[in-house]
Image (cartoon, rainbow, N blue to C red; front, side, top):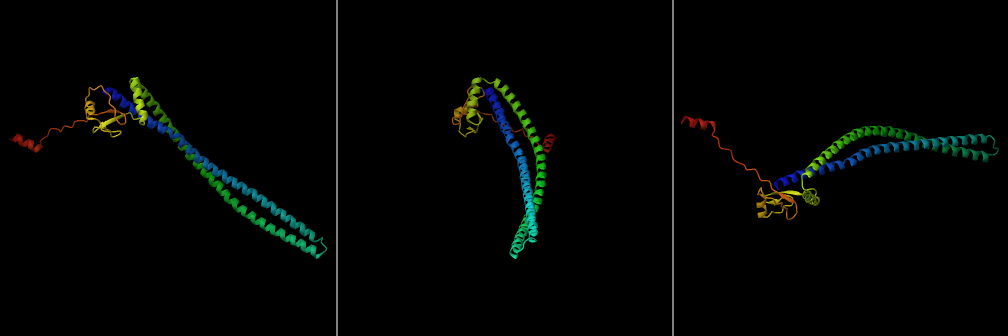
Length: 258
């Protein structure tokens, strides 16, 4: 029975490492997605800056066209002033000229605002493109590192699965079923050590006669915790013997002189 328990303990150790490796492997998709998300966010910032820049260019062209149209009206009104024959008509044309010139001033102010905004968006585009290049460079390094770590973890997983298969081959099928049922209930931990006459997994005290029987190396019985149902095992503590006392050199020399 001691050999069987030892095999199960070794299997549990491998299963614990397998669980840790699988958990580590499961984190890589999220980590890679986070790297891609940082690049996507930087690209989105570039696209937004370029969209604003393009909108500013369109508005600037519109206001440039407005200025030209109002200037053309002013020219027409001024040409017409030489043809009018009454003061009322002349004053009306002068009023139209003044209104058109006011509109020119407004359009030129808006045009100037768009030119200033355009310069700011030009700076934003350049800054966001520079940041994107930096993010992509960092992302390439991070992605390469993650892929390398992932490959190493997959290798560890394959080796542990092979090791587990070899171990399982030496354990009776009914005992494996028993082990896996218990492990499934307790997050992969099917065996628990007895220490200070207690199950170290749940703290339940082991009955005295059970503990005495577990201490017998020749026992063929498998014991379970009455509370958590885990398979119990007991490791005999190493005996500590005090080394024989040795006299200091001075005392030894004194005896010899006697």
